[in-house]
Image (cartoon, rainbow, N blue to C red):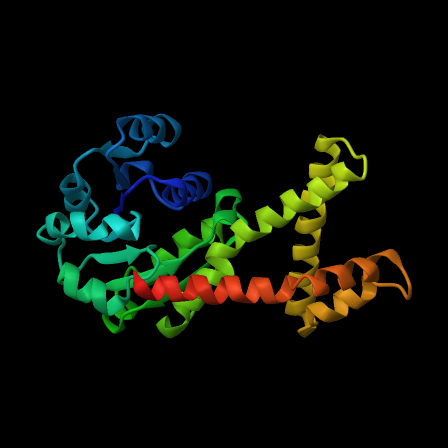
Length: 269
């Protein structure tokens, strides 16, 4: 399989890293384009992939699969140029938020479309990617190969496209909010007298371990996160006092509102 990437940002590089580490593809069959020569030089040096500032070079050589890894705000600008080079057998994989399969089909003139919503933990191989494909894409010989590529950076879950915009917030955008929570936890620790480095170490470890525990328990027997929360909150203890303060300040409501507002924004793109 020959595969190409238009765009070399963080998510694109995460996938390229996964490909390189897993050796799922030969480096000579991977092609990457980007405006930044500096990024391309880094990719060529680190992975040995073929690079170019010319998108048409990538589309021409990546005969099987083409990943579009650009920001949705700039997609329309490059779409006109790349449309004329795409062949009808090529699987086009978009990781852009807010751009539907129908829109991509009309804009790029092909029915072979896959939408993917990865998240930033993919950078460390611990991500999750939601995948939705057009009817034609699902029948493409390279569809399962795309799933194997995505599995190099974490879990892959096939979904109906109608869920993608919601998943974008719950999975794609939420790491930013979790990082904010980590920062706030550390700030609270510093206020209590902890050295900054120690505060970040314990805050990041607590979030990592909690996520792993919640994921494992839910996979095992659908254990509700509230059950895990109850395990930590002793009667008249310190944790339940913190829970009370969070509830008084609208902690859960603020998160729900963030998801809903981000979801609305994705529909506008």
